[in-house]
Length: 157
Ligand SMILES: Nc1ncnc2c1ncn2[C@@H]1O[C@H](COP(=O)(O)OP(=O)(O)O)[C@@H](O)[C@H]1O
Ligand SMILES: [Mg+2]
Image (cartoon, rainbow, N blue to C red; front, side):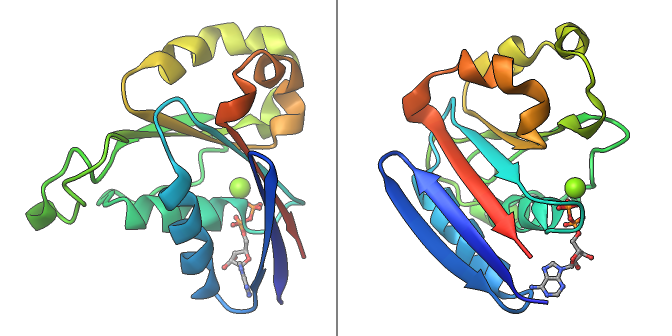
């Protein structure tokens, strides 16, 4: 089933149609070109929209060799990415994004649960980009982060 992916990056909006799985690569490539340390990428969309799928494509293009599993049960996972890995290891060997943190906030019912996850610390680790599924669940925390470093993605299926 085709998806419509809307990317809100700074003052611009880009819409990419995802008809088949390989189109996620285009979305991932665009996002990676905008990534910088400290960035938060929020992924909004219903269950099954493709939030985890997109995260997996991003991880793959960044050179993560471990598979980016859906973090629904672990809530949060972090991966060292391409800029830390050499080209031989499948990384890009360039750039200053060195760490991808993937948070699935679906099961967070109370923002006090966030204390245990140390999100502020996670985001402050050098080179970190954070991808968040179900950002609606942690609106208050997201609102406190720097506006210029937020990229919002909506996936409609
Ligand atoms: N364009 C597409 N066409 C068909 N199936 C797709 C497409 N994009 C994603 N899918 C499938 O839809 C499902 C999306 O699941 P997932 O990424 O876990 O969603 P979410 O994390 O948003 O709940 C996966 O099974 C994936 O293979
Ligand atoms: Mg998911």
